[in-house]
Image 1 (cartoon, helix red, strand yellow):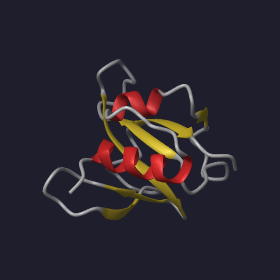
Image 2 (cartoon, helix red, strand yellow):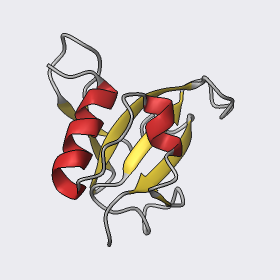
Image 3 (cartoon, helix red, strand yellow):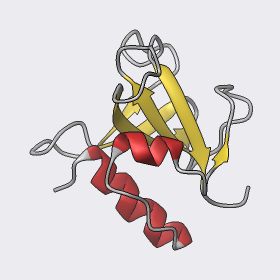
Image 4 (spheres, one colour):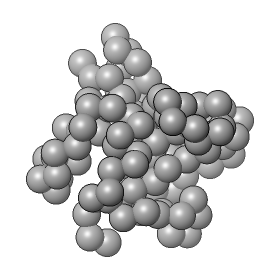
Length: 108
């Protein structure tokens, strides 16, 4: 199974050859990825979204990461021992209040 950053590390490396660190926070701040605004019209499938769970964006607050699929959805590993799943981001009362760091590691 995967934890959230392990899934992203695996997927990004297989798709692009970029070897990301195994940390949700580090993945969301990795300078090799282009910064993408939190705008549904600009986000593309494959974008990596790291979540500041307390909404502050402070160092140490980014504890979860997933991959945008398009149509307001994300694939992620919710936690070790749970199956990888697809969840709705757009309109989500859980994810929408969080601060997001979005990076694109492949050309559009």
